Length: 570
Image 1 (cartoon, rainbow, N blue to C red):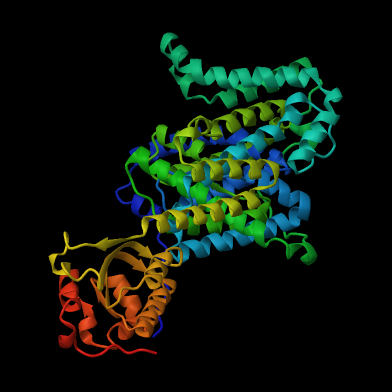
Image 2 (image 1 turned 180 degrees about the horizontal axis):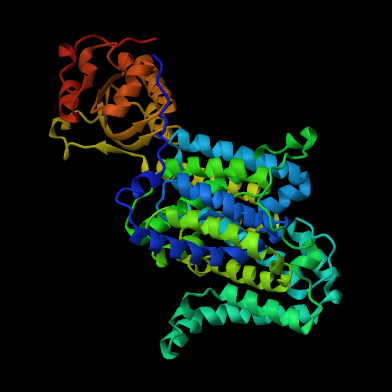
């Protein structure tokens, strides 16, 4: 009999959000969208530059992916676009395999994301342990900060390496090229970003007609101020225009990648990493948004939307996209109530490109580096390191190992190890919860006077491949006459557990011991029936399978001459 795959229904949240939609809600969504666009503008360029791409790659991603994720996604207020989590992996792919293969990898990750959503795998992403997520998030934050040291100090490094030790070596080797003007601009920009976030709301309350100051992001204030100072004073600081030639004031154009099949065949793990990272980030962000607006997103629809966005965007000069927590929180706090705000945010960025692109050429790279330093600091969950002593050893080892592997090696290795370590830890913990307890006459009075020839055991937990030692121990110490197994508290039985029970049945037959089983619940009974184990239990007599342990013991302690039949031996 064929079982149909559980296919998700494609229904964007936008369709439900537009029911009863009016001009008042549109006004709030439009205002929120413009506010988010202001926040996204410097971040989109900074993320692209840090990833080794041109600044317009980040803007195009925020426009195209941001529009598609909002229009087709499963959340009412989530904002999609380029994210700091992708910087490390995107830079590595572009450096190793070229931009053409980065386009292919991003598009294939989009296909994988769509399939994950279509097959209703959205909820499975939540099974990735917190220790793994915190480990690689903090590791990425460190790498983002490290990657910005070059522009923060204004170092003259022609090409930054992609590995941790290579980056350290390049920074140390070119430290003599430090540009004090760039360092001054970066420090001033960082001070503005940090100080504005802390003091602007208080200033708005004290100064008349200045309440709007608290709504202006510190990154925009730093960007405008630094650009003006550098331009007016003519400071010798590298800008977007001097490195990239500015940003084109045109619509994104279709780009067919120039890739090599020889290198494309190595993209499997990068594709999987991009897809998993995108899924984790977007669904975590959607859960944060749910808590802010008291709603519940559709994880499968969200993954399908992320998949479409990541498949389309790279062919128009974009980079990988996912849900972004900072912009989503800004969207909610600005009064957004539907995906329309995210669509407006994308259109507002498009208008900025078409109208004000020439001005972007004067933006100092040192300021963008300072903004990303601030983003990296806020991205990391540093308090978790201080709380490590309060957790168990497996949690600590997993978190620290994933963090170090992310920083020293790469994200792919870190995620692989993290998931593997989490699986091993889970198996160990579940197997340690599985146990067997021998019943005595104090608990079961019918055993009185029969405990030398009859043993009754109650098993607890899951009887799977990691806990078969329980059955093996029973097999090694069989009683003289009858073994009673109470399986009422066995919540799960897998094929390996069933095989261990079959081995126990054979051992009982060989030594002439009767085996009586009781309390088989739904899942264990189903597995026992499908593997033929249930038939082996009842091969001697139907009385060897009882509904509860009391009846099983009553059947086991009958006088020998009243037994149903002699035991078979082999």
